[in-house]
Length: 336
Ligand code: AMP
Ligand code: MG
Image (cartoon, rainbow, N blue to C red; front, side, top):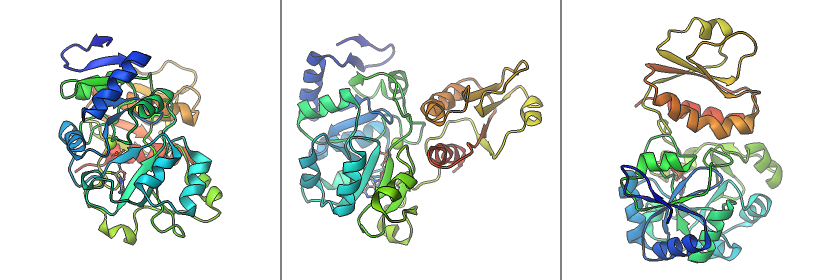
């Protein structure tokens, strides 16, 4: 045990052997633990314990109709929880451990609360060293959505978790800032001949199509008619700061130079040269996409805390990771 965050009941643990052992036992007892992953911090519980999984929904204020992703560390667990097909084996071999979630037909062992009653389950093998070591010690698959109150921007460092859930949970494992900073790519493989990208992420649609040797459709499509309507992966408004966000395809110099002082501008790249107004911010000094992705949520949170009346955000040019960043910016900007 390391420190007790101020005005919070949660303890923040470093990933020492002793702490990992302690937290693995807590998870086996059905307690919740916030965990670091390479995408965002997750709020984990034993995926085979329905009572523990219900506590995730309560702590987050998450609607029961929004299914959870199950995290595994060993290949054998995939077959215990789901019915993998050839496409799943190809993508798992290519991208696991990593930021890719596969939706597959589920096995009866997976509790209904995890999948919101769906006959499918979403599974990922994460790459984060500390989380993997906790998964291994715990010996159970862990269900984990992002470790934040439902609807708010996902947490990418331990301070974000403490701020959002510190009063609602007991254990937070610190694994440092998240390397990727965006939630996992989700691919629906229920029909292996027609893979669908449900959520863009660091593993791009192009990479998935290349690995499978077939095109990948985007979105839930008609076939997802049976998915719960309120799944935020499919809901427009999600990952949202409280401050209204306005999107711009391209932020011209004149636009942000003339900006009102009470409105912030979040640009992709730091403008060069002349002195910059105090209300102008950027995702990366050189516009490198992985760095921009890693900083996106922290920047949105920081700007949200500064009392601006509006955040003007510039969409990122290019495909691949830019699609994932723009997807999160669009959700941040969606109202209602
Ligand atoms: P997150 O909010 O990051 O935990 O991501 C969970 C998202 O994964 C959900 O909102 C759904 O879009 C998707 N998902 C999880 N489980 C399933 C499932 N069984 N079938 C289809 N999509 C799922
Ligand atoms: Mg979430």
